[in-house]
Image (tube, rainbow, N blue to C red):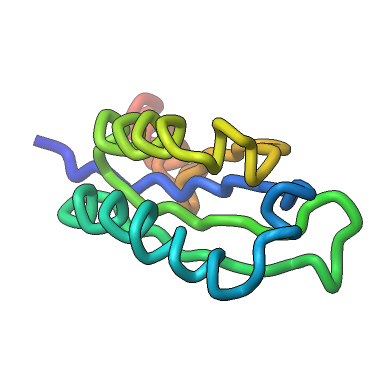
Length: 117
């Protein structure tokens, strides 16, 4: 069985006024009580990192880097987020989702070399 390269998924988001009007204590409480349990639930196969970018980008204030080899678990992660105020209120507008695999071109180059032999 061929080794599955992990997927790296960028979830680009922009904070909405609903999020920004929460005080910092309420924001921390939301992350602790609503988001952390989701991160823990999928943590065996999905790694999530949170980043701030509001200082450097006009329409993307935050982004997640998600790593997984299991796209079904990634889909579960997104569905669980959709059940929270991240999507529902919404606290964040999802601007884009970008999926890639590191150096995937090398796999295709190897495949083409084998086919020519």
